[in-house]
Length: 300
Image 1: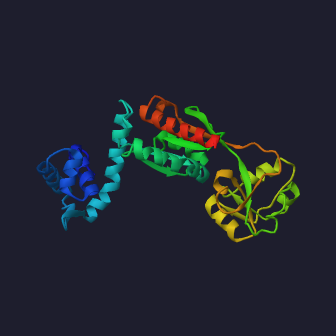
Image 2: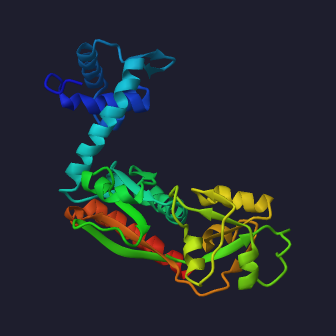
């Protein structure tokens, strides 16, 4: 895309027509006349030497060229909007900002549904992109602007990172309802006898359950290792394997749940962001929502 020869004011028109699949609806979204949309589209067609959209029924559909352009166009517009909003008063109800959040699958499970529910009424135009970035890359991703926030365990380092405690998550042991130990008290000896699933996003190194067992002076050797809890819980339902997982993930999962038979510290989740974004009103709003949701989760 040659930015020197294209009028950047045309790009929102391209995005609106692509999204709405209709010049009429695009004009309503942009609050301009339909002839103005048609004129902008004509100029875009000349620039890209492609029709970009062709008629389909009562609307239009994008050409292969338009499909190829849209990821770059949307990324550019999202970044521009984010930059402009961060310097003005943020109005959630009218914003179309995109936020990028990194979280482990347990963190996303705990936070994403409640956040989506709040946004549905408070900020229907705001979009959230959840991902799971490797812990070693989070500082770099925040610094580059590819991430706005990260929900991770404590311990990330970086001179430009700000952080705050989000929530402490208790863990529990889960086994199938027909497991031979399902009707017995979960003692430490029985826990150590179980055939465990380890869940860790890392390919190597001890998982959380291995770490907390090791702190008691014992060891377990998991028979299966997975990067996410959801498949692990499903495997537990169908086998006689066990998983130690965040309590909110297993307490309503149709499995037998036991408190861990030893003392351990609930896992702290920390919210991270880049220091230079601390005064961004949009980010402050989102951090406030996440803090509220986490507080409510800890009280349940």
